Amino acid sequence: MSIIYKCKRCGKNETNLFPNIKKHLNKKYACNKKKDVIFYSDDQLFVCSLIPYYNNIQSINMDDIDHLKHSNILDRNKKELFSELENIEKNKLKDCPYCNKNFSFITDLKKHMLLNCFYNKYKNIENKNENEKVISEQINNDINGTNNSLYNKCNLTTNNNNNNNNININFEVNNVTPFDKDWDISKINKNDKNSIICSNFMYTTFLEEILKNKNNLNVIIDKDKDSGMVYKNDVDEYIQMKSSDIASKTMEKLNIQLNKMNKDAKEECFLFPNIIDYSRQMINKKYNDYVKTESIQNNVQKFICDIYDSKKQESLEMAEIVIENNKKNTNKVGF
Image 1 (tube, rainbow, N blue to C red):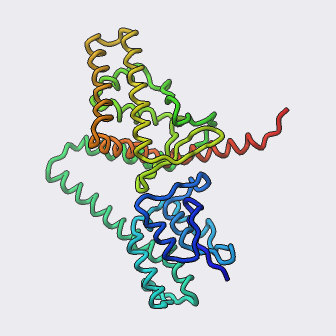
Image 2: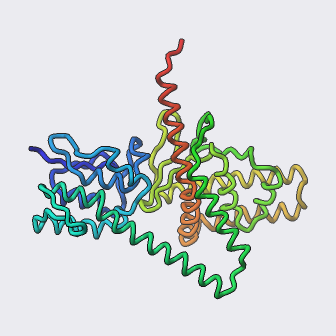
Image 3: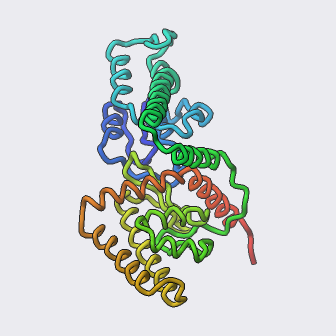
């Protein structure tokens, strides 16, 4: 019986040895993500890569990993997980060290660990840590007399973001704007545009405003992997890019469109000329400082990735719509 491990993320790495797939999954920089697994979470890709194929058949399906749909718990704790799996293999264990359930085959125990006990253990740990963190922050806010209105505003923003993630998108989409094209800013009103170009945080404020338009959600960031998928066009659909390249291209596009907004404000005489001139200087100074200074690049990359990450679920939903629409258009018969 032939046994093969296949990397679900890149689809290129195949081996009949567990240490080899382990080495591949432990690489500092993750392999390139295939377009056809764009909707898989880190944990789903991780599990599918560790469950071997027997005579080209894998004993797992999407129902088995549905609970991992939005998870990266296994991937984040893979050092401990590999240690557990190696201990099972080394000692030929057939009883789960967590729930004591007995299995006839070691491979079945490993699968059980991946899908159930190890995942549940670390999920509970992370939930506990998160709850303790929230309680600690609330206590500190009370002790330090933090402005309650600001605290409530932050909570309201968080709740709104969480609620947005649970809303199904049921509108017709012509297409997502390709990443190498200008964003559609037609829905940003004149007052908001002028506020943005006068803001001390003009670049991040502008990007946040841009991403309120669903058709601009063309980046699916993968912060933990230092990469992301960006929408290219109807033919190639989504391609992988490094986070640093995504941030660099984002800053370039923001700079161009901020300058255009500044020019429009000047032509419309909506702001005092000295304000417009100073705004233009700051737009380009901030961009030039970013281009020239590595430490600024690193900080900006983090901010940009955080903003994209806050829209990740909505961007995935948009990608699903786009890919489905492309399939329908491809299947249409025309004259």
